[in-house]
Structure formats: structure tokens, C-alpha cells
Length: 530
Image (tube, rainbow, N blue to C red):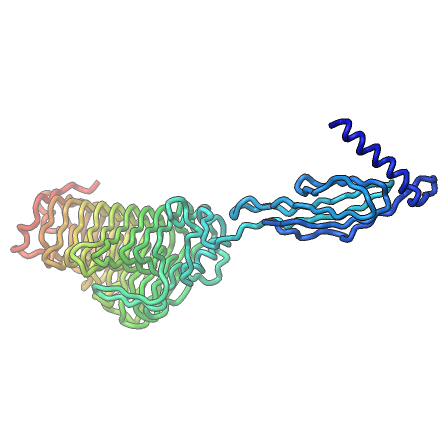
């Protein structure tokens, strides 16, 4: 093998000696040969299946050699003769459809007879196609958050922001101070809110939103709500889950007709809202029509279809509320402006479908509203309020209201279990009813089990006022409740007429109740206020 190579080289040298005479002398009397190729460059070779390239070399050099990058393979690396055709096989610059590969450059170099020629070669890279729906693990920044809002409101897929569990997950705190005008996530065109129904047109949020314990800051609503609006961080939640989210901000608003608003959601349909903490001051300037407007610290209106339940669990509202019903709305019934620290209005066509569990309300409520409460303003139907605590004081100057600290009015198929009131309630009107837990028990199948009042109840109404309920109108039972706190009758000069509570008198102040219904109260305990 060695002898064969030597023979080839000797033959080339001999031949070179013959041809060398045709090469030109340079200034040092060296023989310099001509060398030309038919291509100046080879560019933009395909990354995948690049194929072959052909170069024609013309030279009077006796012998030539070839150099290439390791990703270019020639069919010959040496040769001789006036003209040579060399074929180059270029390797694929491709790994797989999901892997980006950079472009690359190199050169082909022919050398011989004291000269050389270079052909630049470039091969394209590969960029994996971007799947707009491919997950990036969550919402990492403000740009992605804005795109998420647009996707929800325009009916696009939201899988881009899914975590491994298929949840939209917030990966950072967000400051919304730069938003001149807020557009809710899930923006309905029209929401129709009935006593036992809720329907809407337009978009809603239907997935799982995991706040990851992060905080939405400077979420400041300053607007007039149009008729049939649902407004909040989310407009409408429909079969959704929102969890582990903190919201800090404020609301200053009025309304031109019926609607619902809350710091988290305007309306929630068969949705779960868990461990949501709201820290916000709310100012509501009233409506101009006699239509119900449901206002809540967390959600304005909750509707459970019956096929799927609604749940508010471990939610907290902390903030001062200054709200009036407005000159256009002076009712305390189904068309009232209502405010609840957690939810404004809750209903269902089913027997029992909404649960408000272990929620807490803090702050102060200075209001003139037909219905206002620390947890839920109106339980129209099918709502269980369990393990909730109200720590907020309320002063309500409405002319003919129904006010309670846990719930104002509780209707059919509803109950209150193990709820505690620590807030003070003051109502100034002789027509307004005031109850430490509830103003009105209003259906034959509602009940109270367990719970305690520690707050002071002051009312302008001397008859319909109580340390449990203002009016035991219709109910199944009240049992296991602990009466404490204080009770008195309102005086404009602040010298309220406080009543004496002791073991002998406290049952006189649990609320307005007929003799026939009194037997439905069992195991009612008394603990003197500290």
C-alpha cells in the first residue's frame, strides 16, 4: 500500500515536470499555475436533504489537492489534468422537527502549482415551528398576561399558559397601574341576572386560574357600569376555578342599570373560588334605575346551575366600603342595590348548590343600602354559609333596609352553620331591621346551626332587631347558637338606649319571633360580653 502511494506521487511529479513548463514564472522565478472554478460560491444549501453540489476545476497545475469541512464530503481529494469535475455531498444540518439548529459556513479549497482557489459554502439552519398553543408553563410577565386576556376575550386557546396540571398559572406578581382602562378577563356582552337564573352572551373564563400565591397590585376600577354588565378582574366565570390569588386595589363606580361587580368577578356560574384574598376599598355611588345591582368584595353574583355547584372557600375581603343605592333605587327587595363582603347575591334553581365556607370579612362598611352584610347580602336560594367570620363594623343609614352581619336575607333551601360575628352593626332608621347574624329568615326550610355573636347591635327599629335574627319569619330550626355582645336602640345623639343582657333576659333579644315559632329555637346559650 505504501509502495503504491509512493508510485502515485512519483508519477505526479514526473507528469508535473512535463506540465510545469506551461506555468508562469513569478518575480522569484517560481512556476505559478492558473486555477479556476466554475462557481464563485455555494450558498443557502438546504438544511434537510441538502443533496450534492458539483464544481468544475480548470488548471494547468500538474496536481491538485482538496480541503473541505468535515460536513462536506468530496468524491475525490486529489487529482490532476487540465479539467476535473468534483462532486460534493453535504451533510444534513437537521436533527428533528422540534430542535433549532444554527446555520453554518465553511469553504472548499483547491490547491496546486503554487496557487489555490476558495469557494465559500453556507448551509441554512433550521428553526422549529412555533406552536402558539404550546405551553410555556404559565404567565411569566405583563406581555404574556395581556396576550392571555386577549385570548380569553377573543375565543383563542389558552393552553399556552398551562402548567403541568393544565391550569393557567400566574408565575409572578403583576402591577396593573399602567392600565388606563380595565377590560375584564372573560368579557360578556350582556348578562341577564334573574332571581333563579343567570345567562350571558359574549366571552367568559372557563378554565382553572392558579394565582400561585401571587398578587395583582393596583387593580383600580374607576368606571360607570352599563346596563346588564358583569365587571371585575374576571367578568364572568363559567364552570371555572380560581385559587391562591391576592388582589390589591380599589373600586370607585356607579351604575346605569342592573348588573353585578366584584373585585375578583362580576358573576360566577357553578365555579370554585378558593383562597382568594382581596384588599381593596370600595366606593359605590348608586344606580339611576330601580334595578338590582349585586356588589361583592369578591364576587357580585353567584349562580349555581344545580348540575354543578358553586363554592367560595377560604376567601377574605379586607377594606373599607362606602356605598349608597342612589336616588334611583330606594328598595330593599329583589331590585335593591346589595353588598356582601364575599358575595352580593346567591341563587340557584336547585335545592342546594352554593357553599360559602370559611370566608372572612374585615374593615368597615359605611353604607346606605337596602341589604348589606359581611359575608352575603342575599341568599335567594340554595346557599349554605358555613364557618364564616365577620369582623367588619357596619353603619347603615338606609330608610327601610334589612341588614345582617353574616347575611341580610336568607331564602329557600339555605342554611347558616357555625358562623361568628364580631362586628358592630348600627342602623339609624326606625323602619330598618337589624340582626347580628341575619336580618330575615324567609323560608320554611332555612336553618341556623351553631355559631356566635360577639358584636354590638344598635337599631332604630325597636321591634325587629335581634342578637341572632331581626325577624324569625319562616324557618325550620335554630340550634346550638351562643348569644353574646350587646344590643341597644339608636339615638341620633349617640346616647343609645342599651339593654340589659343576662341569663334572665337574653332570650328577649334574640329577635322578633312568634310564640308558635319559639319552640324551634333550641340549645341557645348566653355568654356575657367581656
